[in-house]
Length: 377
Image (tube, rainbow, N blue to C red; front, side, top):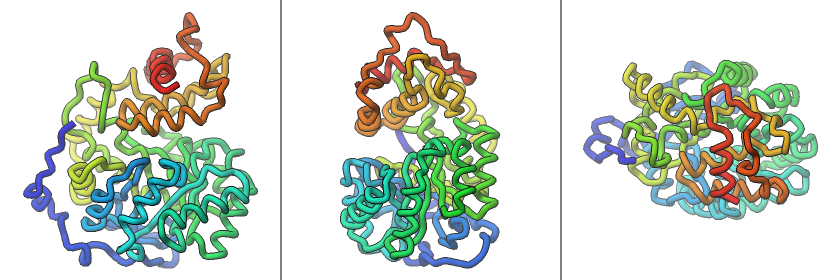
């Protein structure tokens, strides 16, 4: 995909402003959030003022992209301990070191026990070259029991010790875990999937409940269905990612988002979303794209969860495949697939004559699972 984001056009958008004038201080304000400004929003009850478009470092961040993001006023950066076994954190920390006090820095842990949560945070601080995080997430918690009391208590202790200012949860299924998060009454932030391609009333309702409770909501996977690599047999319009970001910003319950940018042209396009209105043309473009990829892209409705009689984790394998087919990140897709138990990794949907699962959204489930298993196993 090509991006029309020349320096001249970017300047016309009015976004290439001096960093000193554009980036607000990372400050906390008491009480619930005020009406949201165009470029910066308040992250729930944390009071942190964050750029409406943040920056997902991803598994293999480009330090030039991260530094450019700071120059453009982006002040929310997201990474994780498990991305590249700490390499993502190391690169991110080095790139933003000179501006550490002016950015909101979030990282995540896959750990379930208190000892491992603490170990991971210490390792993250060392890799990032900082003595505190702004947000420390329990990573990829898609069921209520994945948010263990042990891990929650460990996060609270680390917050009390000043190693992280706030704590959060990242999840692909916010509907499934919203009740657990709200009942815990401990979390400041939730990071979850949210995009035009997976829009659904149950997802919007869960996000609204979190926002009403003062929990800051960070959107992820915001453009994966409309950007990057797509299978060669599918021909899509050249534009779309910018429209996808503008669509996310229509929801005032979303404080920021963390799209990944492979290069500075993509980054500059992403930042434009903070200054441009969502138009009928954007709506039409996203609808067309969504229909084109209907057989290929999982809408994360979780209707198929637990329905494979052989135990294939259908939503997980479809999501891993999307990291490659729609995110262009084979390394991330394979890393996630290889974390599955050996007996699951050895299963082959090609061995079944037919699939018992019928996707209500029109995804060709069996064909997609066969592709995932052959590509990633």
